[in-house]
Image 1 (cartoon, one colour):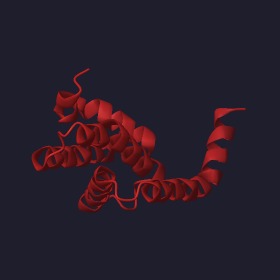
Image 2 (cartoon, helix red, strand yellow; image 1 turned 90 degrees about the vertical axis):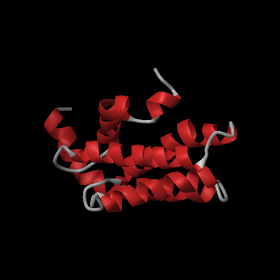
Image 3 (cartoon, one colour; image 1 turned 180 degrees about the vertical axis):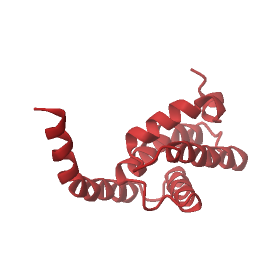
Image 4 (tube, helix red, strand yellow; image 1 turned 30 degrees about the horizontal axis):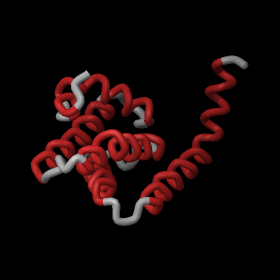
Length: 134
């Protein structure tokens, strides 16, 4: 299969995957009722998207990627360790905005891949790097 064929196939199936990832995002939230760290992350993602005016550019795979990874790898462990206080939460909320702003620097849609690249590119300036310095 050629690259052109793969690109054509991806563009035809994108609406289908948008619906799938939107459903996965909502199902993840519904599967964890009462999970305060998850609600914090969801609010941070939604607020940052709105504040940066990215509603028309961000794909559902990017939202889902942020939600699941920030919940499972950052907020939930910090909360269970008793370290998730208001100050840390505000700093992590800013990290979400920094990541999305970095992803938005490139034109076009913001995908999960864009968010991953933006996280790597901004990592040294994120609070995350001080929580888990790699």
